[in-house]
Image (cartoon, rainbow, N blue to C red; front, side, top):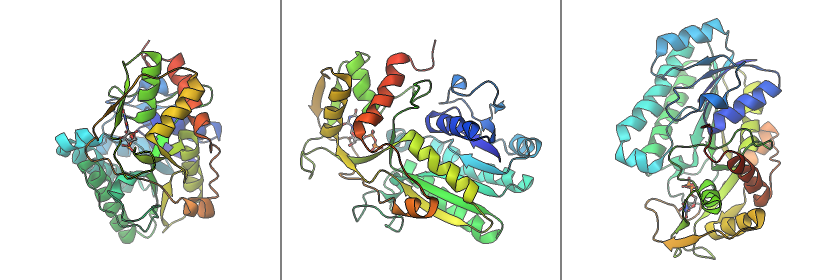
Length: 329
Ligand code: UDP
């Protein structure tokens, strides 16, 4: 298939580009490079540095490359930033998706795989979280994705030929096994990279946010899924899409790890002490986020390969230790 990957220079998008190319698909990348890295995209892949708002040029590239389907990863994804600058999130994530869909409509492209998030569930009212669990996002980031989901359902309702898969991601982690691409954010807020930065001396210490949660060891529990496993579901979804499909899947491992458990696993992988401080809770962190991903396994034949947290951390470690400055030379 001919596939446009938006956000293909970003963390998850670049892993998708890699897998799509390996599977023999023709890939085109669109990325504004606001947070992405040109170096993350292979030279042979056609690359367009466009903003999602550029409906006209996007329409042209869809036509030119005879795109069959779009995987839409491009988004802003920092919860704290979304609270401070909500309009930026609605403009980029929600209005950006409107523009992209308009371009697809203009070009007659009907297959769409969308990166949504567990943040659309907010503080979930049940654990584990099913696709049917009530969605009550508690921050602008979650709402910007939730609004996009609603818009996609409306478009699917209006156009019987539209074919849609929405994935709600849990905590994505790790890197390709060869360590050549990985997570490289200018502002890194995620737990695993920050633990590794503390181990590398790139930061003084890792701060554990809150030890008084209602969990066995007092720290928050999350569901970590390896980026290559996550991306793999997208390939299955894209090839399975047929007109009229409206599919929604959680993507998580189904295994919960507390912050302390992640730290312990990292120590085993790195064989090194990790300077740690215990501080107050970070605002807006739900106590437990755990996915039930049986639906993706059942309907897409999804079979995540990484079941051991240490293996996930090992792949991230390989990337960070070989690229201490990310993609910068
Ligand atoms: N966390 C932490 N220290 C950090 C970053 C994260 O203790 O430097 C905790 C955070 O409070 C949450 C978990 O680790 O309970 C996962 O956070 P992350 O930002 O990686 O992902 P999120 O679940 O917020 O999307």
